[in-house]
Length: 269
Image 1 (cartoon, rainbow, N blue to C red):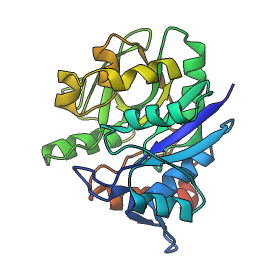
Image 2 (image 1 turned 135 degrees about the vertical axis):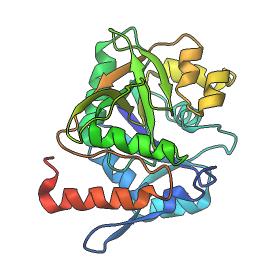
Image 3 (image 1 turned 180 degrees about the horizontal axis):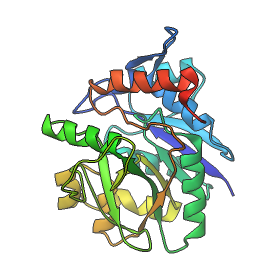
Image 4 (image 1 turned 90 degrees about the horizontal axis):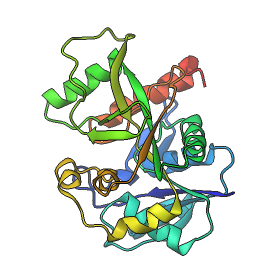
């Protein structure tokens, strides 16, 4: 029962053009691009049959092949990473599960993806699964600070008792109404930008029109909800590691600081 990880990457990002090729530096001065660090995160996941970078840009292809990644060139007409994954899955059929590890999430721990795959396998009613991480006060305060500054700092998720998603938003939901200490657990869940799809659901996705909620929020997973498909939210454990995606230029320094924490031995993984 094979699992394929696809890392969709495009150069022409609206918010941050050229983002996959942004350089992140380690404390010792080692430089690696965002796409390389995301590929290395995928390669650390156990039980994966294949990892490919999916792009429509020759610059990203050349960079990825330069550090040893397999690359699948996809259409420039793909509207988001899920459509890019659907194109790859059609070209490389036969996987039990297709995982979308977005190319802006180099801090994704391998156990996030391993737990995600097991969660989807255990819930036959779900067609898509995605990880959620309970925010501590430090993460929530960062979200709120970004929103006050007019930046999108991440996506939050709300779900029901069966852990099937109710909504995802770039606003901070649910409303909490009070501050939290840095180490305090909060009722807000950070949506981690990874998806696991059953190929049958993934194949349907490109033919659905973009709905109003997806259009407003700019969140591709809302297309599944708008078409009545169940998205399972799998709660994952940080194990002391900080997690953040690279959404804005300001996030480079934040992620480099988190890399420094990991390499200094403060990362329990």
